[in-house]
Image (cartoon, rainbow, N blue to C red; front, side, top):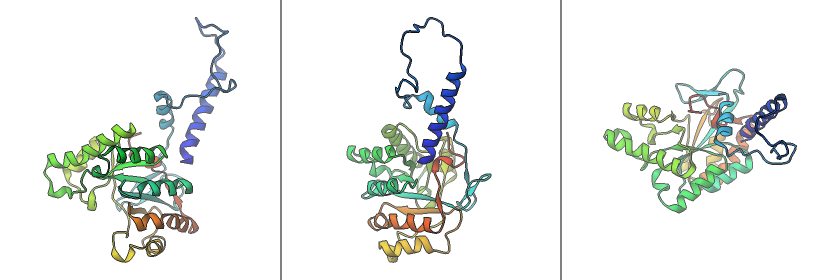
Length: 270
């Protein structure tokens, strides 16, 4: 989230520099008319699509997925970093989890299911999570095993979520994670066609009975031997995970891990 603010600051600096270097007098302009600028105290409108596009073009990829779904650094990006992801959102605690992560300044991807965004109330929750600065991913409409569906059904599972997310947030998902990590040749092609990056995970535990407890889940997520540079952490919208989330993030940071901003992952459509 700090990274996105940095891009805005960089772009504003470039725009102001360009304005200061332009000494030519514009034609057919009333010079007595006040022009919005930094000195006048008027705000630059960053809702303008052109400005947003220019900001996004400044985003330089820092990480890329490898063959085992970890994130590896590009160039001199910090290797001691992990990616936080939340599946099955927004069910019961996704908004609480987003608020926790926001307070911790910890970016994450929320992978949403279509059956959790089919009412106005659920769509409002999704919009709130998005407006807090979190990345929204596609986790299919009904959490079905894609290998058990024909191509038309797979298309409905994937396209419904992308279309609904775009309807609610104004932006299509840039990441796709199949339920159970099961993909087909058709789903892979469809995901690529829709501009999404296919993603699975490195490790996760919160669906196992012995880790349906905040303390136990925190301990395993932070202390597992599977934790390594670039780990892609899988969590879910669950009561115990929501309760453990703050301690998980703080535990990872205590071990020196940085949280990866999804916007800096190579392969997503900018």
